[in-house]
Image 1 (tube, rainbow, N blue to C red):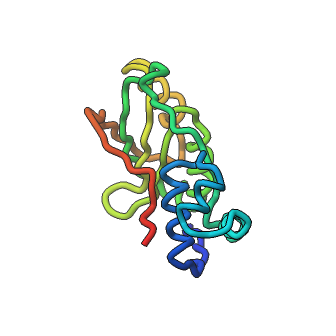
Image 2: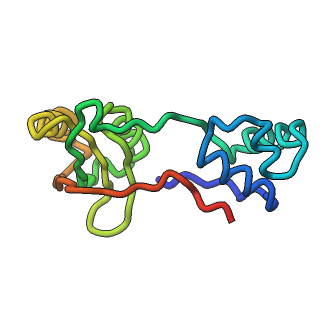
Amino acid sequence: MLRRKAAPVNLDRIDFEILRLLQNNARILNKELSSAVGLAPSSCHERIKRLWSEGVITGTQALVAPEKLGYALCAVIFVNISKDGQLAIDELMDELVSIPEVQHIHLVTGRYDLIINVIAKDMDHLKTVAYKFLTGRKEISRYETSISYDSRQKTMVPTS
């Protein structure tokens, strides 16, 4: 079941610049941000409030290096959904993303139905997570795990 996406919001050049700067540093002071985009601080603040209210900005967070907390292993789990599980994909995805070690879940086309990115402390931890949360589930007919040797990640959305 695919969720309907909202229509894009009309944004101008200044909105995109505000978004670019906030994505680069969410802790930037409004005074610095308004100066960088050429607006009065009150006008800049109103634009940011509008971007929040229209759902363009959905949150802020600290990016944490998993390896600094002992999560040295990154894996990708490819999942095939059983026929019984097809009706409850949203619920399954919501349940799986609530697992602390799960970083992302993608519902995809092609050979697999779900791709799950997981972090773990070591191979035993990964095995425990997979067995505890995936093995024996009626919604999952099969899964396959691949260890990631290295990765690159972007956290910024294009703003042009």
